Length: 122
Image (cartoon, rainbow, N blue to C red; front, side, top):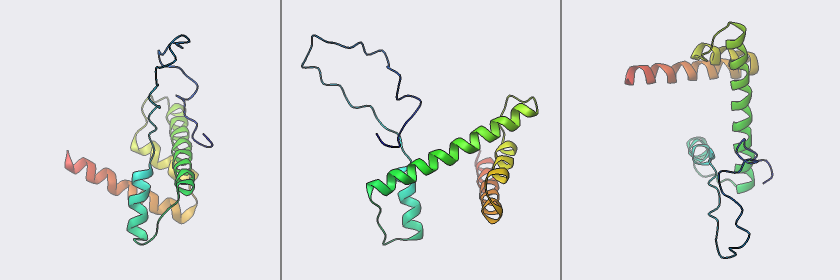
């Protein structure tokens, strides 16, 4: 695929290449995406607007990219402090470092809200 490269893509998972058997049809590998969630958010902000599969693929790549950047930064922060756990504190700091101004402020408040909601539901 174009932009959908995953860590799993280059690796074979215990399926020996059956050269003799020409009938065996391999089930295509399932792809996990954020499409459903991107669509739900789109409908919240623009109920009458649709999205092409190309645009959805781009949005999915965007979400994966930001996730990766935040994870790497949070991991680095934990390592600097000789910690083996990424907590909400590392994630929050990563957000503050990676996102510009107002975007970081909104992201931090949404994150805090989500963590509070999760903690109270337990």
